[in-house]
Length: 324
Ligand SMILES: NC(=O)C1=CN([C@@H]2O[C@H](COP(=O)(O)OP(=O)(O)OC[C@H]3O[C@@H](n4cnc5c(N)ncnc54)[C@H](O)[C@@H]3O)[C@@H](O)[C@H]2O)[C@@H](O)CC1
Ligand SMILES: Nc1ncnc2c1ncn2[C@@H]1O[C@H](COP(=O)(O)OP(=O)(O)OP(=O)(O)O)[C@@H](O)[C@H]1O
Ligand SMILES: [Mg+2]
Image (tube, rainbow, N blue to C red; front, side):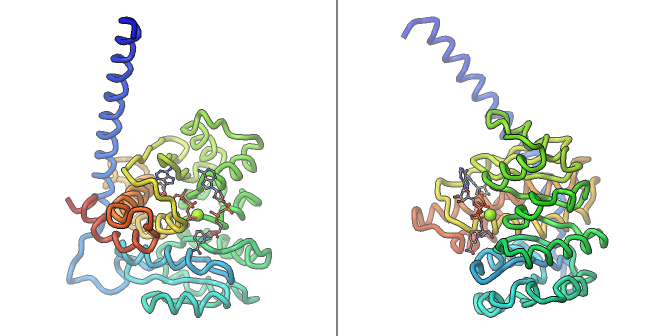
């Protein structure tokens, strides 16, 4: 190798390691903000006080996704976790877990009312895991989103909930208590629908920032090799070590965890997040936790790792990241 190209390589290596050190420091600072929003365990609290979460999703085809989301909210620390699903999915989800409260209402003609009557008792909704794309169900979910917004309930929107938002961005435009958690495909579909053009794949920070701004500063979490999070003002990157195992359901773990973290973050407020947006801090917490669960499960199970193995790691991963 020529001398000039050798020193250029050294400079590049140094720049890379400085950037890495900088991003590790940023990650640690943001993890500290997540720690600040976690409510202390206390013997004086009553059931429900640390969070009651509702998951809206689950149809004939998909029963795993709403289960993963709802059980993850409980494992992270919610006291009660409800699932509002289509009637065909309910007995299956109930059979997975006695810990979930399951309402077979989503395909009923009164679906919006059936969910709305529970809203005064819920702190946050996770809308979309395993919802499917049936028009009648999506119309009901549109109504549920409208009544939830009217009551100022925080909503995490994932999976087929994002399909609905791509059809009707006005549904959540400007709603500051919404967080969207698109995967690669969901992000490009949303970007196309909202910004009326393909995203620039060489500028993922800019794309996430622009999508959030175009949606009226709704918080957007683009999941991927690195998760990129923005509220249209600030951009955070989560590159917590995970693994190369990409089994289905990991996004459901993320959206369910985020449901409870969003509630905790809003309760704690910006004083506890050092002026950063509570929703961004919550989203950073859920991304780090999901990736840490993936890392720990992969250490034990390698290629056979599934989302159930990751859920079994939630307790240890939470302690490692947030209870140090
Ligand atoms: N056990 C279950 O019940 C599960 C159900 N699921 C549900 O399945 C439904 C459809 O979800 P999908 O995520 O398949 O959504 P889509 O139907 O939009 O498909 C996304 C597609 O993008 C591909 N993709 C993902 N990341 C990519 C990347 N980085 N580059 C290129 N392609 C990429 C995936 O292979 C998938 O085929 C949702 O309701 C979802 O909740 C999933 O959550 C997985 C688990
Ligand atoms: N290439 C990758 N490397 C490391 N982590 C990744 C990678 N892609 C996604 N992840 C992580 O996996 C988790 C789920 O993201 P993913 O893109 O699989 O969501 P999803 O497609 O919605 O999942 P689901 O199957 O639940 O619908 C996120 O925490 C994300 O950070
Ligand atoms: Mg998904």
